[in-house]
Length: 499
Image (cartoon, rainbow, N blue to C red):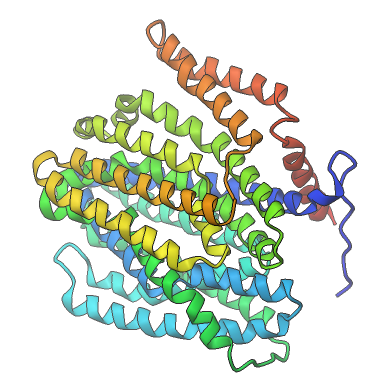
């Protein structure tokens, strides 16, 4: 195949910003996919909340949360390692070792996922359907192989497969079940809904496997010490990844166990906006992650710090409007899912404040991992998980969903401020550059102050006026936010697509 030479950077962008432009280009594609995935995820939640009723919806949310948690444990941290190692080997001029690296990482994932699926088949709780265990090895391997494609700087497979195909087909399957229930009264049990939700992992697994196989058909090299080096890096991340997913999912299971399925459904609906915000974080992180690994492996801390600050500014510009509006309009947000969920207004507001703090710190855990501090990352996540579970065990029986929200908020703050301090003191890296500060100020003005001041006059006018102020602010702060990098990233994506 003839080699395609990309056009040089635009004169508006400095030559040294090529890496940032590449990150912006990958991040933009991921953000489009994240938007689709976020909309589909909200759609699935809405359909389940409306179509199943609070008790059955609680069972559905608990089962899918347990599935995500177990599949994350089965991945053994390879979602980070299979980005870090291919990127590192490519930066060091040793790409022939990537095939060995993939074998080292993927085989244990397949074994552990199969063992965990068999364990759940025989010992799952009553609300976890056995049929769901069939998809556990498929889901774990699919996510790990997609991570490996990002290690090759291939962002498109993640966008298409993970953020469009999977959530889109999940929404389609759940929508068909909800439509049958609405049109002909054919109510299906939650078990069928969970299988419809898990089935889209199959095409993702097949397509990701084909992509990895095509990348590794060349004759690979072998290095005896690579396996031990791989797992020294990955082992702490494996535990941290499981703990990180537990932070996001185990609280739903605790609410279901300690307060019942109906409060669990209310809590799951209350926290749905968090998943949408995390998709934006993941979209930017996945684009930036391999470049961070390359810069830090070459000792370029200044370049890594600038990339971290720019990524944080982009994340704030995208996620803070959502979290601020949810904070101010929590009652309206919950009413969309049904009047039975309005009891969770306080939980929504606590979670919104926590997410403002978390996204303001940027992808702090990713930066710590790409700097090789996976043990630190593990300790941080475990501490945050202990904080959350301790608060949940005390607060959920007394406060229900609101108690779980307090526990998660405390854990989120711990898991972001602690690594933020570690990065600042040990590596002199921080996210609070001028673009980040301008992004925070603009978001607070547009979607915090403006809607709050105009709400007594008209609740609907606040977001519209805020959006207008936001658009004007983006234009006035165009150079200070370095949006030329984003524009150049879009331009390159269009040019490469045309070629």
